[in-house]
Length: 375
Image (cartoon, rainbow, N blue to C red):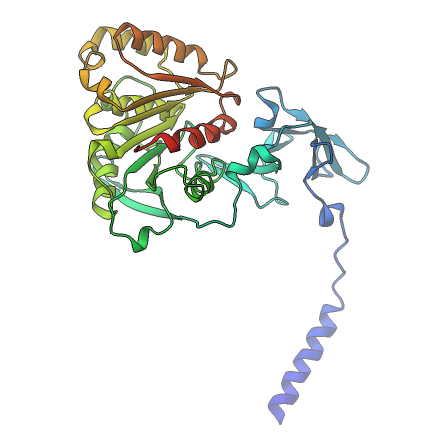
């Protein structure tokens, strides 16, 4: 009985002490909606920052225009309205007094090399292909593997299609590389790659495949945008560790005709440096929004004629170059690169889509080229 009396006494004492603490004062942040989609497809951004002196918001919804300034309200909430915007998935970042600030009111985010950016979707039929639907879903695994060339353990993401665990069939494999500043998670978050592939598979529009998304940045410095794999520690790691690990640990075909490699921006150069130097390894090569810089083109012409003239390049089933239109920052570099390919008799297919140098274009690219693979 004494034990219960003591417990009751402690409970009463605790309640009494709790009553002495002042209640938290409510703020506008309690019910704030930070990214509100208006009926006319405009987007209203809001953030509670009562002590701030300047707030802006940036993102791919601005299509390369300067960041939008927010106006401070009397209650300490800063707001601005942009648009109307076409239906799509957009990134955005707040900057408060010069400091990039994650929106804590929005759990949807993109992971990149140096931080996080928020995501917001303007719904519409244009976003149907990347929407999570009631269809069979593949698995996305976070995988750690030993890098022999770098001497460290590294991370990558791997997508396996629905039914992979129950099958004994060896699958073709797509290696899907990210761009500068992003990381191996980017194709899964802002890229929506798993949902795009799930939907295509459910519609019977593509072959089941394993998709490997490695980390293109390395702690060892190198020329990620240079000529050839030996200048880039990632390319060395990819050829020496990533591919052998996948082919050992996963049920994938090792035939050339069952391998594809695609990548955007920096990852597009890495695709070229791997595939042009080792065309016998791949039947599908898909560089997106990329192109060698003029000094590298000069280096290619002066030092790597044997690479450019390798007949194995034109035995690739599909060499597919895509750009995000004239607003793509790599547009001129790509034109210069294609002129180099034309000069050396390298055959390729070229496509343009809207979206500039952003995932607005690259998600579209994935949705378009995935059905072309392994046919």
